Image (cartoon, rainbow, N blue to C red; front, side, top):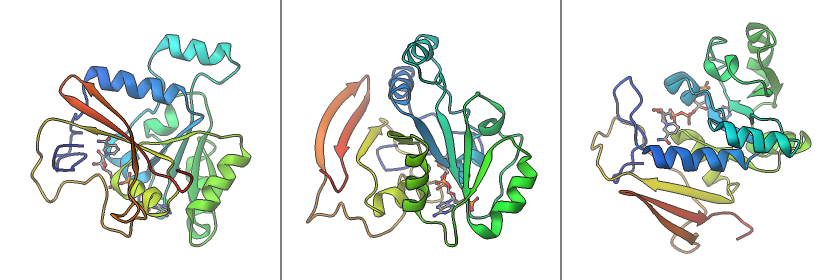
Amino acid sequence: MSVDGYIDDAAPERLRLSSAADFDRVDAVRAGCDAILVGAGTVRADDPKLLIRSQARRERRASRGLPPDLTKVTLTWSGDLDPGARFFTTGESPKLVYAPSGTAAELAGRLDGLGEVVDAGEPLELPVVLADLSARGVRRLMVEGGGAIHTLFLTSGLADELQLVVAPFFVGDPSAPRFVRSGVFPQSPERPMRLAEITRIGDLALLRYLAGERV
Ligand SMILES: NC(=O)c1ccc[n+]([C@@H]2O[C@H](COP(=O)([O-])OP(=O)(O)OC[C@H]3O[C@@H](n4cnc5c(N)ncnc54)[C@H](OP(=O)(O)O)[C@@H]3O)[C@@H](O)[C@H]2O)c1
């Protein structure tokens, strides 16, 4: 995020907040996870591939009997997802879409096998999604945004760790997306997170917090 808490600007192209060194660090974190989750808003706005970029890391995973790519996961209420999105068209690992009952069948028909649509009930609740992922063998889930999804995980108290990277500039536009939206966060002044690490990455700062109930 920017110093003033934004994770993008309001322009259609994606704002680059990280440096090459931080993208590489993120790639290493991805390589240590089983699955990666972004909200449908990020799939629509950024069209991310969500793959592990480093060939060496992909090979190391393969040598440990792991698939080279992570299982990709997204959440949608509306079902507004394009089958041509790179979320669906890149990588060999499973692509899971959690949708409420009213949306799931129509979306499954439209995706036509490009991804598995999981009917997560009505309303769709995060514990149901996480229990299903756990039953599929996902032990470490990386959540990469955007703001609505960060807010959902943090307000639910279901994130164990928060890695916050601060870019050395301001966005200053209230119509741009923020790191989190408003909500009731259990990580309050009375119950703050623990700061586990501060690392300098050039002019960026990585703050790693322990955020979960089990801290
Ligand atoms: N700087 C960074 O590190 C970073 C990382 C990722 C994204 N971003 C930026 O973040 C922005 C997108 O953020 P965003 O907040 O608009 O979108 P988002 O958090 O990626 O996705 C929000 C969407 O997720 C779905 N969703 C959320 N909670 C749900 C629930 N309980 N059940 C079912 N579906 C649920 C809904 O999809 P439907 O609308 O389909 O119903 C909702 O609109 C973009 O500008 C992107 O560039 C920045």
